Amino acid sequence: MKIFISIASYQDPFLEITIRSAYDNSDKPENLIFGVCDQSSKPIDINSFNFKDQIRYERINPLDAKGPCWARSKIQKNFNDEDYYLQIDSHMQFEKGWDSYLIKYIKKIKEINSPIHQLPIITCYPRSFDIKDFKKNEFELNTSDTNTLTIAYREDSMFMKNNYSRQIGSIALTEISHGYLIAAGFLFSTKDFVNQIPYDPDYYFYGEELSLMLRAFTRNFGIFHLPAVPIFHLYRDIVEVKRKLHWDDSEDRNREIKWHEREERSINKLNNLINNEIDGAFGLGNKRTLKEYEYISGVDLINKKVIDKEKAFTGNFISSLPWDNAIF
Image 1 (spheres, rainbow, N blue to C red):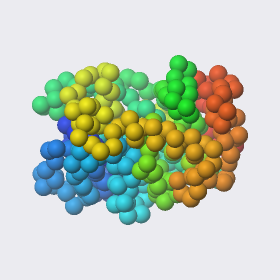
Image 2: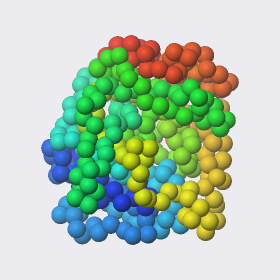
Image 3: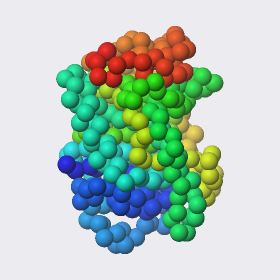
Image 4: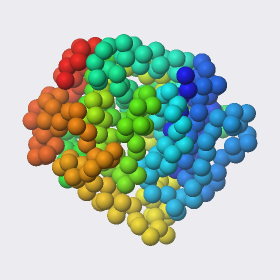
Protein backbone atom coordinates (compact mmCIF):
# COMPACT_ATOMS: atom_id res chain seq x y z
CA MET A 1 0.00 0.00 0.00
CA LYS A 2 1.87 3.02 -1.31
CA ILE A 3 1.74 6.51 0.28
CA PHE A 4 2.39 9.52 -1.93
CA ILE A 5 3.80 12.36 0.21
CA SER A 6 3.33 15.84 -1.26
CA ILE A 7 5.83 18.43 0.00
CA ALA A 8 5.80 21.97 -1.39
CA SER A 9 8.85 23.86 -0.15
CA TYR A 10 9.93 27.47 -0.48
CA GLN A 11 13.54 28.34 0.47
CA ASP A 12 13.20 25.98 3.43
CA PRO A 13 16.32 24.65 5.23
CA PHE A 14 14.13 21.94 6.82
CA LEU A 15 13.12 20.27 3.56
CA GLU A 16 15.75 17.54 3.61
CA ILE A 17 15.24 17.00 7.35
CA THR A 18 11.50 16.57 6.76
CA ILE A 19 12.00 13.98 4.00
CA ARG A 20 14.47 11.97 6.07
CA SER A 21 12.29 12.08 9.18
CA ALA A 22 9.32 10.68 7.26
CA TYR A 23 11.44 7.90 5.75
CA ASP A 24 13.44 7.00 8.85
CA ASN A 25 10.37 6.80 11.11
CA SER A 26 8.16 4.85 8.74
CA ASP A 27 7.29 1.21 9.49
CA LYS A 28 7.36 0.52 5.75
CA PRO A 29 9.66 3.09 4.13
CA GLU A 30 9.75 1.07 0.92
CA ASN A 31 6.10 2.06 0.40
CA LEU A 32 6.74 5.81 0.45
CA ILE A 33 6.83 7.98 -2.66
CA PHE A 34 7.84 11.62 -2.20
CA GLY A 35 6.57 14.32 -4.54
CA VAL A 36 8.68 17.43 -3.92
CA CYS A 37 8.50 20.91 -5.43
CA ASP A 38 11.62 22.67 -4.17
CA GLN A 39 11.32 26.39 -4.88
CA SER A 40 14.80 27.40 -3.83
CA SER A 41 17.99 29.08 -4.95
CA LYS A 42 19.95 26.13 -3.56
CA PRO A 43 18.49 22.72 -4.45
CA ILE A 44 18.87 19.75 -2.14
CA ASP A 45 21.21 16.94 -3.24
CA ILE A 46 18.90 14.13 -4.31
CA ASN A 47 21.88 11.82 -4.84
CA SER A 48 22.57 11.98 -1.10
CA PHE A 49 19.42 9.95 -0.40
CA ASN A 50 19.82 6.18 -0.54
CA PHE A 51 16.11 6.08 -1.49
CA LYS A 52 16.38 8.67 -4.27
CA ASP A 53 14.38 6.44 -6.63
CA GLN A 54 11.40 7.08 -4.34
CA ILE A 55 11.64 10.87 -4.71
CA ARG A 56 9.95 12.64 -7.62
CA TYR A 57 11.76 15.93 -7.35
CA GLU A 58 11.38 19.21 -9.20
CA ARG A 59 13.43 22.30 -8.45
CA ILE A 60 11.95 25.72 -9.32
CA ASN A 61 13.73 29.06 -9.38
CA PRO A 62 12.07 31.01 -6.53
CA LEU A 63 11.48 33.97 -8.85
CA ASP A 64 9.25 31.69 -10.93
CA ALA A 65 7.29 30.43 -7.92
CA LYS A 66 3.58 31.31 -7.80
CA GLY A 67 2.56 30.21 -4.32
CA PRO A 68 1.85 26.97 -2.43
CA CYS A 69 -1.25 25.91 -4.35
CA TRP A 70 0.57 26.26 -7.66
CA ALA A 71 3.42 24.15 -6.23
CA ARG A 72 1.07 21.51 -4.82
CA SER A 73 -0.72 21.33 -8.15
CA LYS A 74 2.61 20.68 -9.89
CA ILE A 75 3.40 17.93 -7.37
CA GLN A 76 0.11 16.18 -8.06
CA LYS A 77 1.14 15.86 -11.72
CA ASN A 78 3.62 13.25 -10.40
CA PHE A 79 0.93 11.32 -8.53
CA ASN A 80 0.68 7.83 -10.03
CA ASP A 81 -2.44 6.35 -8.44
CA GLU A 82 -0.74 5.51 -5.14
CA ASP A 83 -3.12 4.15 -2.50
CA TYR A 84 -2.83 7.02 -0.04
CA TYR A 85 -2.07 10.73 -0.25
CA LEU A 86 -0.29 12.64 2.52
CA GLN A 87 0.15 16.40 2.18
CA ILE A 88 2.50 18.16 4.57
CA ASP A 89 4.56 21.31 4.93
CA SER A 90 8.33 21.21 4.45
CA HIS A 91 9.20 21.69 8.15
CA MET A 92 7.84 18.61 9.91
CA GLN A 93 8.99 15.80 12.20
CA PHE A 94 7.56 12.27 12.45
CA GLU A 95 7.13 9.77 15.26
CA LYS A 96 8.06 6.15 14.77
CA GLY A 97 5.31 4.19 13.06
CA TRP A 98 3.44 7.25 11.82
CA ASP A 99 2.40 5.49 8.60
CA SER A 100 0.89 2.47 10.36
CA TYR A 101 -0.96 4.80 12.72
CA LEU A 102 -2.61 6.83 9.96
CA ILE A 103 -3.47 3.79 7.84
CA LYS A 104 -4.96 2.01 10.88
CA TYR A 105 -7.31 4.92 11.53
CA ILE A 106 -8.31 5.48 7.93
CA LYS A 107 -9.19 1.79 7.64
CA LYS A 108 -11.19 2.03 10.87
CA ILE A 109 -13.15 4.98 9.48
CA LYS A 110 -13.79 3.19 6.18
CA GLU A 111 -15.35 0.25 8.05
CA ILE A 112 -18.47 2.43 8.37
CA ASN A 113 -20.69 2.02 5.34
CA SER A 114 -21.65 5.59 4.57
CA PRO A 115 -20.55 7.98 1.82
CA ILE A 116 -18.55 10.32 4.08
CA HIS A 117 -16.75 7.42 5.77
CA GLN A 118 -15.78 5.94 2.42
CA LEU A 119 -14.14 9.23 1.42
CA PRO A 120 -12.26 10.22 4.59
CA ILE A 121 -9.81 13.10 5.00
CA ILE A 122 -7.78 13.09 8.21
CA THR A 123 -6.47 16.56 9.06
CA CYS A 124 -5.53 18.99 11.84
CA TYR A 125 -3.01 21.64 12.77
CA PRO A 126 -0.37 19.25 14.12
CA ARG A 127 1.38 19.49 17.45
CA SER A 128 4.58 21.50 17.53
CA PHE A 129 8.24 20.62 17.73
CA ASP A 130 11.14 22.81 18.82
CA ILE A 131 14.79 22.95 17.87
CA LYS A 132 17.36 21.79 20.41
CA ASP A 133 20.37 21.78 18.06
CA PHE A 134 19.75 22.39 14.37
CA LYS A 135 23.25 21.36 13.24
CA LYS A 136 22.94 18.03 15.06
CA ASN A 137 19.34 17.48 13.93
CA GLU A 138 18.16 17.39 17.53
CA PHE A 139 14.52 18.32 18.03
CA GLU A 140 12.01 18.17 20.86
CA LEU A 141 8.55 16.90 19.95
CA ASN A 142 5.51 18.06 21.91
CA THR A 143 4.31 14.54 22.72
CA SER A 144 2.70 15.53 26.02
CA ASP A 145 -0.39 16.89 24.26
CA THR A 146 -2.41 13.83 23.22
CA ASN A 147 -5.69 15.65 22.55
CA THR A 148 -7.74 15.25 19.43
CA LEU A 149 -7.33 18.59 17.70
CA THR A 150 -10.18 19.93 15.60
CA ILE A 151 -10.25 23.14 13.56
CA ALA A 152 -12.63 26.06 14.05
CA TYR A 153 -13.10 29.51 12.63
CA ARG A 154 -11.18 32.27 14.41
CA GLU A 155 -13.66 34.71 15.93
CA ASP A 156 -11.53 37.83 15.54
CA SER A 157 -10.85 37.15 11.86
CA MET A 158 -14.21 36.34 10.28
CA PHE A 159 -14.66 37.57 6.71
CA MET A 160 -11.52 39.69 7.07
CA LYS A 161 -10.99 39.65 3.31
CA ASN A 162 -14.39 39.19 1.72
CA ASN A 163 -15.18 35.46 2.19
CA TYR A 164 -11.78 34.63 3.67
CA SER A 165 -11.62 33.90 7.42
CA ARG A 166 -8.74 32.63 9.52
CA GLN A 167 -8.82 29.22 11.19
CA ILE A 168 -7.56 28.05 14.57
CA GLY A 169 -6.99 24.75 16.34
CA SER A 170 -9.51 23.59 18.94
CA ILE A 171 -9.75 20.59 21.29
CA ALA A 172 -12.34 17.90 20.56
CA LEU A 173 -14.58 16.21 23.10
CA THR A 174 -14.04 12.70 21.75
CA GLU A 175 -11.24 10.42 20.51
CA ILE A 176 -12.22 10.59 16.84
CA SER A 177 -14.11 13.67 15.73
CA HIS A 178 -15.93 14.88 12.68
CA GLY A 179 -14.69 18.18 11.28
CA TYR A 180 -15.73 21.02 9.00
CA LEU A 181 -12.37 22.64 8.12
CA ILE A 182 -9.12 21.44 6.53
CA ALA A 183 -5.49 22.22 7.35
CA ALA A 184 -3.46 22.21 4.14
CA GLY A 185 -0.22 21.60 6.05
CA PHE A 186 -1.36 18.15 7.15
CA LEU A 187 -4.00 16.05 5.47
CA PHE A 188 -4.13 12.32 4.86
CA SER A 189 -6.59 10.65 2.53
CA THR A 190 -6.97 7.99 -0.12
CA LYS A 191 -6.18 8.45 -3.80
CA ASP A 192 -9.79 9.61 -4.23
CA PHE A 193 -8.72 13.00 -2.87
CA VAL A 194 -6.30 13.63 -5.75
CA ASN A 195 -8.60 12.12 -8.35
CA GLN A 196 -11.70 14.06 -7.30
CA ILE A 197 -10.26 17.26 -5.79
CA PRO A 198 -7.12 18.10 -7.77
CA TYR A 199 -5.29 21.15 -6.49
CA ASP A 200 -6.36 24.42 -8.06
CA PRO A 201 -3.16 26.34 -8.91
CA ASP A 202 -4.94 29.70 -9.00
CA TYR A 203 -5.23 30.05 -5.22
CA TYR A 204 -2.44 31.73 -3.30
CA PHE A 205 -2.57 31.46 0.52
CA TYR A 206 -5.91 33.05 1.28
CA GLY A 207 -8.64 30.72 0.11
CA GLU A 208 -6.56 27.54 -0.12
CA GLU A 209 -8.00 25.68 2.87
CA LEU A 210 -11.63 26.79 2.67
CA SER A 211 -11.81 26.11 -1.08
CA LEU A 212 -10.48 22.58 -0.49
CA MET A 213 -13.01 22.08 2.30
CA LEU A 214 -16.01 23.19 0.28
CA ARG A 215 -15.01 21.21 -2.80
CA ALA A 216 -14.53 18.14 -0.59
CA PHE A 217 -17.71 18.62 1.44
CA THR A 218 -19.93 19.01 -1.61
CA ARG A 219 -18.46 15.79 -3.03
CA ASN A 220 -19.31 13.80 0.13
CA PHE A 221 -15.81 13.64 1.59
CA GLY A 222 -15.82 13.41 5.38
CA ILE A 223 -13.39 15.33 7.60
CA PHE A 224 -12.00 13.49 10.63
CA HIS A 225 -9.67 14.45 13.46
CA LEU A 226 -7.57 11.92 15.42
CA PRO A 227 -5.88 11.88 18.81
CA ALA A 228 -2.11 12.38 19.08
CA VAL A 229 -1.36 12.68 15.36
CA PRO A 230 2.25 11.43 15.05
CA ILE A 231 3.45 14.29 12.84
CA PHE A 232 4.76 17.58 14.22
CA HIS A 233 5.02 21.07 12.72
CA LEU A 234 7.58 23.84 13.24
CA TYR A 235 5.62 27.01 13.91
CA ARG A 236 7.36 30.31 13.30
CA ASP A 237 5.75 31.91 16.32
CA ILE A 238 7.33 29.22 18.51
CA VAL A 239 10.86 29.35 17.18
CA GLU A 240 12.29 31.69 14.57
CA VAL A 241 13.73 29.98 11.52
CA LYS A 242 15.73 32.02 9.07
CA ARG A 243 14.07 31.33 5.76
CA LYS A 244 12.71 33.59 3.10
CA LEU A 245 9.00 33.77 2.40
CA HIS A 246 7.30 34.09 -0.96
CA TRP A 247 5.93 37.55 -0.17
CA ASP A 248 9.21 39.01 1.12
CA ASP A 249 10.03 42.18 -0.79
CA SER A 250 13.50 40.91 -1.62
CA GLU A 251 11.88 37.89 -3.27
CA ASP A 252 8.89 39.59 -4.86
CA ARG A 253 10.29 42.79 -6.35
CA ASN A 254 11.59 41.09 -9.49
CA ARG A 255 8.40 39.18 -10.27
CA GLU A 256 6.04 40.32 -12.99
CA ILE A 257 2.97 39.44 -10.90
CA LYS A 258 3.33 40.51 -7.26
CA TRP A 259 2.14 38.46 -4.32
CA HIS A 260 -0.68 40.88 -3.42
CA GLU A 261 -2.07 40.54 -6.95
CA ARG A 262 -2.09 36.76 -6.57
CA GLU A 263 -3.77 37.14 -3.19
CA GLU A 264 -6.53 39.32 -4.67
CA ARG A 265 -7.12 36.83 -7.48
CA SER A 266 -7.26 34.03 -4.92
CA ILE A 267 -9.88 35.78 -2.80
CA ASN A 268 -11.95 36.56 -5.90
CA LYS A 269 -11.83 32.93 -6.94
CA LEU A 270 -12.97 31.84 -3.47
CA ASN A 271 -15.96 34.17 -3.80
CA ASN A 272 -16.75 32.70 -7.22
CA LEU A 273 -16.54 29.20 -5.78
CA ILE A 274 -18.94 29.99 -2.94
CA ASN A 275 -21.35 31.55 -5.41
CA ASN A 276 -21.16 28.37 -7.51
CA GLU A 277 -19.74 30.18 -10.54
CA ILE A 278 -16.97 27.67 -11.27
CA ASP A 279 -17.59 24.52 -13.30
CA GLY A 280 -15.75 21.22 -13.33
CA ALA A 281 -13.29 19.73 -10.86
CA PHE A 282 -12.31 23.14 -9.43
CA GLY A 283 -15.93 24.00 -8.64
CA LEU A 284 -18.39 22.71 -6.06
CA GLY A 285 -19.72 19.17 -6.19
CA ASN A 286 -23.38 18.17 -6.21
CA LYS A 287 -23.63 15.69 -3.33
CA ARG A 288 -24.09 18.18 -0.49
CA THR A 289 -24.92 21.87 -0.35
CA LEU A 290 -23.51 24.95 1.39
CA LYS A 291 -26.76 25.05 3.38
CA GLU A 292 -25.82 21.67 4.84
CA TYR A 293 -22.35 23.05 5.52
CA GLU A 294 -23.95 25.96 7.36
CA TYR A 295 -25.71 23.49 9.68
CA ILE A 296 -22.51 21.85 10.91
CA SER A 297 -20.25 24.94 10.85
CA GLY A 298 -22.62 27.66 12.02
CA VAL A 299 -21.45 29.87 9.15
CA ASP A 300 -23.53 31.16 6.24
CA LEU A 301 -20.80 31.71 3.67
CA ILE A 302 -23.07 33.01 0.92
CA ASN A 303 -24.38 35.88 3.06
CA LYS A 304 -21.19 36.22 5.13
CA LYS A 305 -22.93 35.67 8.48
CA VAL A 306 -22.12 33.69 11.60
CA ILE A 307 -25.34 31.89 12.47
CA ASP A 308 -24.13 29.95 15.51
CA LYS A 309 -21.01 31.10 17.42
CA GLU A 310 -20.71 27.86 19.39
CA LYS A 311 -20.49 25.84 16.20
CA ALA A 312 -18.27 28.28 14.36
CA PHE A 313 -15.68 29.14 17.00
CA THR A 314 -15.28 25.91 19.01
CA GLY A 315 -15.06 22.22 18.25
CA ASN A 316 -17.74 21.38 20.80
CA PHE A 317 -20.70 20.75 18.51
CA ILE A 318 -18.90 18.94 15.73
CA SER A 319 -16.98 16.70 18.14
CA SER A 320 -20.13 15.88 20.11
CA LEU A 321 -21.57 14.11 17.08
CA PRO A 322 -20.84 10.35 16.95
CA TRP A 323 -17.95 9.92 14.53
CA ASP A 324 -19.21 6.53 13.34
CA ASN A 325 -22.65 7.79 12.30
CA ALA A 326 -23.51 9.24 8.92
CA ILE A 327 -24.86 12.42 10.43
CA PHE A 328 -25.12 14.64 7.36
